[in-house]
Image 1 (cartoon, rainbow, N blue to C red):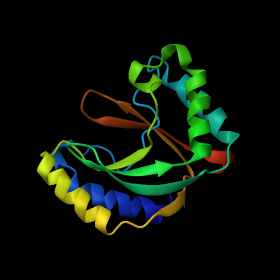
Image 2 (cartoon, rainbow, N blue to C red):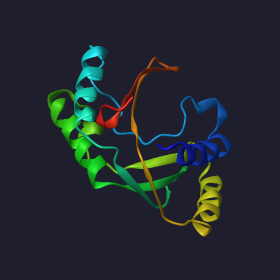
Image 3 (cartoon, rainbow, N blue to C red):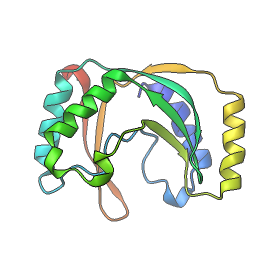
Image 4 (cartoon, helix red, strand yellow):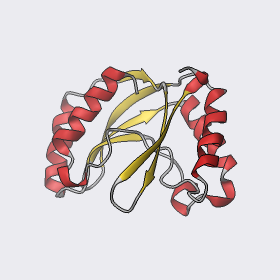
Length: 160
């Protein structure tokens, strides 16, 4: 995300996401699990696909109540098409969760009591105004059973 957008989402996430569960900064998940047996091949594939793309514009379209959390809904045809190309590259090795439909979002609260989530949702929805931002690149992370390891920062369009 662009710096200002990231700062806003990450600030909300730091304020409202349970601290003991908040291991990575604000983000929009494209996949929950890409084939991990060869991380270099994953980085190479995603880099090659991202190089052919311009930084997509993404619309922030609403605030979503998730039951035990709150997320901002996102829409972007270019990002959706990019995700589809990654899915095609790993089609035979995607998990069932990643083969399902994709509903892009940025989670700012999760794993709290429903009443806590409802209160935050009401507060954020009341002041919500649609906006747009650009995604300059992709971050790849590897889950290590608790902590996360950042594998790569991959810019769109091959920019540095």
